[in-house]
Length: 101
Image 1 (tube, helix red, strand yellow):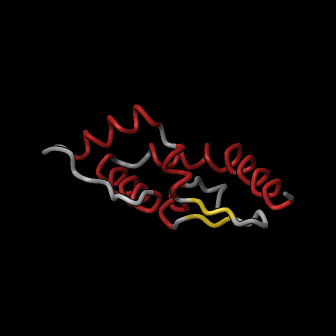
Image 2: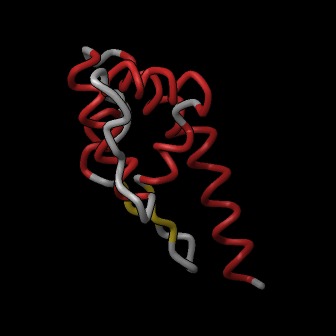
């Protein structure tokens, strides 16, 4: 169970420290860039890729974000190893504030 404890500790640190930076950085992007970033992160974390649900894919994404929030995308772009190590998707890293990576 040691590895689960290390993973849990890492996720706690990521949620407290890096997630707020990601959320702050992603909302600063214009919606066209934010849509592409979120769509890519969504595709990484789901077996079924983001599908265009209508003639207005950005509005679809805006509605999805309003229901689910940004943490789902943060988790999709983050890999945590059994030893507690972690790796961010490059697009997630780009959204971190200058204090991040």
